[in-house]
Length: 296
Image (tube, rainbow, N blue to C red; front, side, top):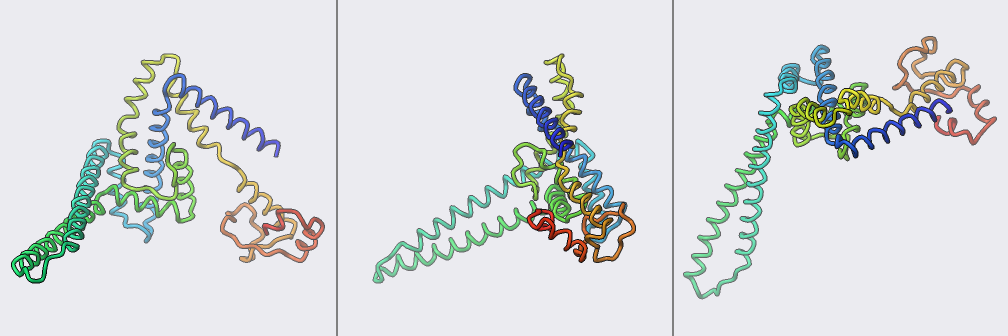
């Protein structure tokens, strides 16, 4: 507990230091770029590992193509512009469709006297023409949606979101990196627009670091990078503490893994299921309100 208290204090001091630097030297935007660039680097590492493993979860050919785009600044820039253009085209088509549907609704409420056969005939002709226009516009919207779904950034976003939520160590690594990005409220999913922003950070980061160094000689960009990385790595150790306590309980025979493997305490037990032994129940009764036993 003392160790954790000092670690949290150190993390808070580092946060304050970076916050002060952001206010004094205007490096806040650069730190955001650093965080987004780091996330892309972590993603490249994870995808490269998936390619080597040849898992059935993902198509290795697709992953190779996505990694190629993420590693190439020119391809990132081109893909970012392409996605933004496709997204804008979809928004325009959807706006046009909304206007036509609203016009269609107003047209259907327009009433014509039954005796006026000429107006009735014109109304039916106009209605048929408008229905055709609405259907054609819906087809355009569907085509724009399909084009956006086929964009590489949409594929990258889908693969990344799936890895983040699969409960593996790779997913936890990406989630930790993503949570460090300022303004990213939902860390469980990313979309193509997120990757447009990430791509811009990757492209402009080196230039911004040079500009920052020239404008502020006393501010070392490398120090900012190192401190931001230290802050990103200063994770809460609660889960590690829980694993350590569980291994102590296994050693003293208070809990046993359902798998029956009790000899190797150095193995990964994150996904293991445990049972409380009679000895564990007896020990637990000595302090019934202990939150650890409530958890077990």
